[in-house]
Length: 339
Image 1: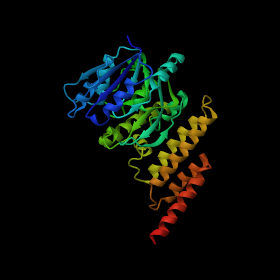
Image 2 (image 1 turned 45 degrees about the horizontal axis):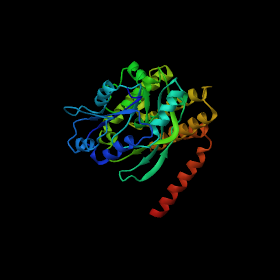
Image 3 (image 1 turned 180 degrees about the vertical axis):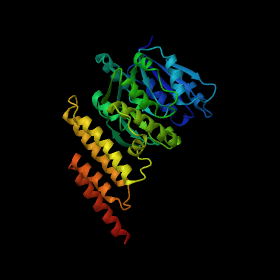
């Protein structure tokens, strides 16, 4: 029985599939099985997989396209290893990814899920930016209220804890990872490694862009559930929707969303388990988020409320004033150029 099962569904992914497969087969850690599930692809994905004659590859085909979530759950039923690593068919894992994550989980039995930092690349392989998420369980649980702090294709999980929470939710065809992290955070601890272990490809065919409307709806649903659990109260869905940047139709709604973000900020800052660096991260993130809410609303005669949100952002982080001044000077310069 291998120590790790790498699970990779693919749907019409021939463009980058070969690079993804090779990045797993070339890992420095080789005690793994590689479960590839073809989810009804109509391109050459099947042919690409079958080019590789490696006994570690276990290839399966769905009779028709059943979607990512159900394909993942089918894969979970095929896993034979105590550790489960996720992989997407358009990304590439760095050679030491599996080795570092196995070592980390072996050394930290209280951790059930570990992700990593990522390097963002485009469809041509050009490197754009590095994403370095928070690393410890306490701050990651806080982050789950406002964004997804663990990149799905970077994770390695203990199979037993995934089974404990009931696999992926089949009602979530997108944002299924965020929902899973929320449920797992209740039974185990989460972590991220600071190392870049994956090149995450962003392109026009990403599922979050192809199914953007559904993805936005599922994000609101996931955040609403997490915020309500975290704060111990039923948070209004329409306010969560505004926090997510949707339907902020009035200055009043923006003010309510800002109040909710500030409440989460207070809970985070009062958590003695967080380090000073983690609290500084929360302070910076919340001030930027509040500023984004304030700028989202044009002045319609209720400008005072929007100014209140800007003032709240400055109260949370006085250094945000520098950003406000820079943005103002940039806008003034653009206006002068237009004239």
